[in-house]
Image (cartoon, rainbow, N blue to C red):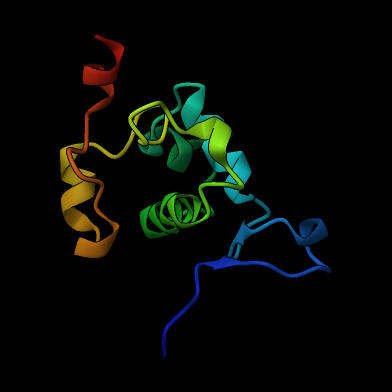
Length: 108
């Protein structure tokens, strides 16, 4: 059985795509990321999240870039810190971000 980690239901969160098992929308996670919150920090602040849920939300945003255009930089990457190398390595290959940067690298 495959779980769809990002769902959209008109009766939940006014139809805004959200992470399964949470009350966090894809937009919430993108806002956190663009404000400098790392995925590791998201996991601390929201224990109901899992790395795969965050990665699926980021992947969903990439495939629906028109809906989330303000969260992408001019190079087409999501703004803000992504997964660090260790967290990225633990994700399924299709969810790893190309050139995953550490939080420290994004601050430099």
